[in-house]
Length: 254
Ligand SMILES: C/C=C/C(=O)SCCNC(=O)CCNC(=O)[C@H](O)C(C)(C)COP(=O)(O)OP(=O)(O)OC[C@H]1O[C@@H](n2cnc3c(N)ncnc32)[C@H](O)[C@@H]1OP(=O)(O)O
Image (cartoon, rainbow, N blue to C red; front, side, top):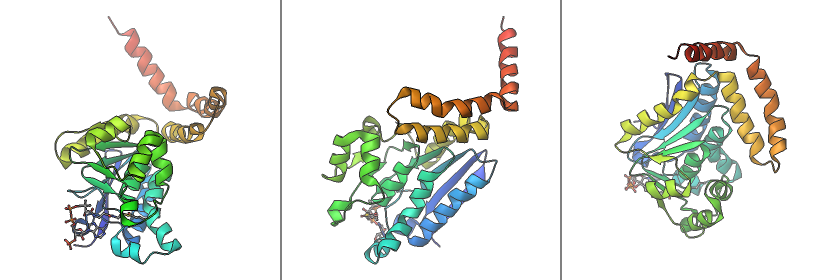
């Protein structure tokens, strides 16, 4: 079977599956380019409000394809990064549904999403140094930012793997979803549901503000970042409609 990114848009969600089971969903240059194209197609599709990234079981993603990695120069490495960087750049909310091992660049891919749901067999492994490789693709930044300096050191310097429960404790995953791949995807769709129900413009603006305020030192600076998009949403017909529905509901309470 050909290695590919399977992209399905339904119910407001783009489900992107890295489907290369023979190599445990390892990322070739071609797969990374396909993944980036699939993320961009989801952004262009106005019916899509959230992106779920997963891998064909039993793993999430085994990282860079080892033969692509062995031959990689700087453009080659950057081409491998392109898939997970497209997820990191995505203007829509993103969820990684991690059902198995996420190793090396596969960990980068999982951490590039806004939120991770972990199946009981999920495993988060940096791996790089064990292979004699310096971490790449922003791994030192991502792990420190998400899990703090000690956990980042444990993962990148000491190669500590995190199972699903440990990933939740470390703040790398939102929660563990019991069951198999289907249950994991159902949980991802349920998590996405409020984003699917939200007006797309306000949703995209909220994600933009999360990024813009993340590195600010002052609360007041965040208030300034948020005031314009909040004013824009106040002026939208969606807000007027939803407000009137809410008021009707409140009035009709016994
Ligand atoms: C710039 C980025 C750098 C990086 O990403 S560095 C990290 C590179 N990745 C790795 O080191 C991961 C290597 N793979 C594994 O550790 C394991 O696999 C898994 C934990 C992911 C899964 O284990 P299991 O389910 O037991 O599978 P299996 O028997 O080890 O492998 C099944 C087939 O998958 C191929 N494969 C696994 N990972 C890769 C890879 N990264 N690139 C290419 N092929 C891979 C194997 O060779 C083998 O193939 P065959 O069935 O022909 O013997």
